Amino acid sequence: MKKAVIVAFDNFTDIDIFLTWDLLNRVKLRDKNFQVKIVGTASTHRSGCGIDLATHGSIEECNDADLVFFGSGSGARVVIKDPAFLSRFKLDPGKQVICSMCSGALIIAALGHLKGLSATTYPTAFEALRNFGVTVIEDTHLVTHGNIGTAAGCLAAVDLMGWAIEKLYDETIRQDVIASVLPIGQGQVCMY
Image (cartoon, rainbow, N blue to C red; front, side):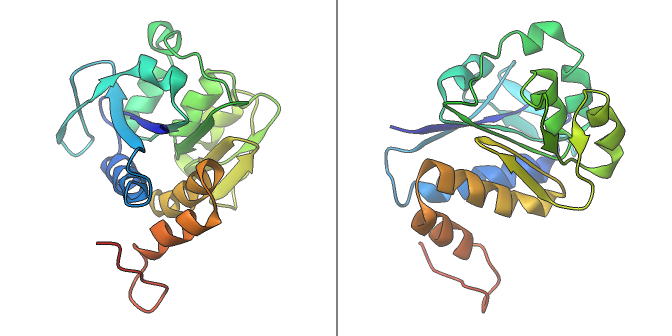
C-alpha cells in the first residue's frame, strides 16, 4: 500500500491543500489501496480563509509515507521557526517523494533537504528561501531534483502532483489524473 500525506498547519493556503487532496484522491480510482491523509500537529487546523480542517493523523506519519506534501500560507513562516515542529520530521528523499507548493519550500529548506539544490517558491518567499542557501529559480513554476519537487503559483499544483504521481506510479496514471481536471477540449477524461 502506498501512502501520501498532506501537511496542514494553521494559516495554510486553502487551494494548496484542497486541490492536492482532490488530485491525490483521484489516484485511488486506479489503486484502491492508495491512502491519502491530511496530517498536522493538532486535530484541526484553520486555513488562511477561515476553514477549520480536521486532520487524519499526526505529522509523524510523514516519516513512513511514500509522498509528503507541504502547502503554503503565512503559517509556513511560523512553523519553520519552531524547532519542536521541525524535529518531528525524519524524511528521506532517497526513499520518499517530498514536494511543496509556494512557501512550503521554506519547510523543506528548514528541514535541510534543499541544501545545494535549486528550488522555486512564490515571489514573496524568494528572499526567505535564499536565506537558507537555496538557489531560487524565479522564472519557472516547477523545479525537481530526484524525489524533491517545488512549485510556485497555486495552480502549479496540477503539474507538481502530476510529477509526484508519476514518481509513485507511472505516466499513464499521471495522464489519467491530470486529464480528469483539465478544461473540456484539453484532454478531459471522465473518471467517475
